[in-house]
Every structure is written in structure tokens, then in C-alpha cells.
Length: 193
Image 1 (cartoon, helix red, strand yellow):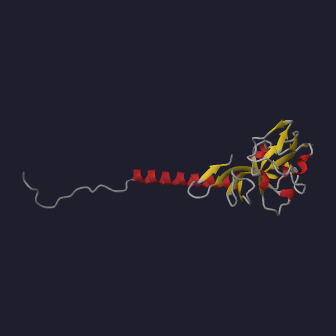
Image 2 (image 1 turned 180 degrees about the vertical axis):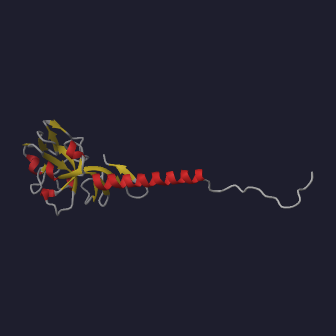
Image 3 (image 1 turned 90 degrees about the horizontal axis):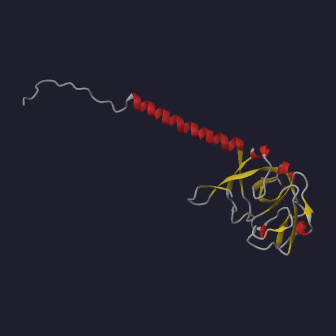
């Protein structure tokens, strides 16, 4: 085989082609669009707050950041079992308080012998402990229209609707439904249950 003598010209293959550039640009655009949509949903439909105290343990912990859906209750009423944030006594300058909806409008409730009775049925499985202080729920009460009875999951370490200075919470004071939380450590984000 004879060697080619003289100059040799060959076409060098491009590392970056127009197709690769277009693919990268579309991928970058999709990432940017996803981040923009996430920002829009979290900061326009929701708000962020921090859990203060141990009243919602073991569901939520002191200092845990949660995101609230503030639009959902414009469409539907809060339901029994929802974790909500509200302004105590409607005070716009107060920090949002986070509790679970136990009673909804029209419900009859009373706490006797450490057990919550809802519409005449005992709800002993709602809390891990017996309820030490029934507060104003020691006497049977019927929730009025747009009134909600809220309690902390850690019922014996919670200032909630049992307290006379807080009482039942009016719907207009409920800011939003707990949507998801920032978990501690390496566990990331989780939905509030």
C-alpha cells in the first residue's frame, strides 16, 4: 500500500452540532419553565409558615416549615381531619397556628373522661393519649355555620379550640390547608397527612 505524499485534507467532525445545541436549548428551556411553574404554584397559590411548638407531634414538629394551599378553601370547605393554618382570633399580626380539624359545622361534640365524642360516637382512636383537659368542650356544644373545632395531634400539649381564649375557629380565619412540609435531615419534602 502506497503512502499518500503531500498534504492531506480531511473534514473535522464538529463537537457541537446544531442538533445538539437545539436539544440542549430545549432541555434548558424545559428546566427553566418547570422552575418557574413551581415558583408560581408555591408562591401564588400557597404560602409558607413554620410550626411553632409540639402541639402537632408526631405529624409535624417544632420549627418544621410547611407550605399551605390557600386557594382550596375558596372552592371547598375544610374537612374533618384536614391540617389547617389559621389566625388565632382573626389577629392578622399573630403567627399562623397549625391544628387539625376535628369538628365541622353542624357537628355536636363533647369531651368526657378523656375521650372526644363526635355526634354521639366516641373517637378514642383520634389521639394517642387520653385528653387530660376538656376545656370548653367539657360541655356539649353544637358547631354553628362556618365554625370549626380544631385540636393539636399532641392534645395534651396544645392550645386549641378547647381553650376559652381561642374557642371555635371561624372559616374566614382559616388561611389554608397544609399541603406539604420540609422534613428534617435528608428526608426532603413530604405531604402533610
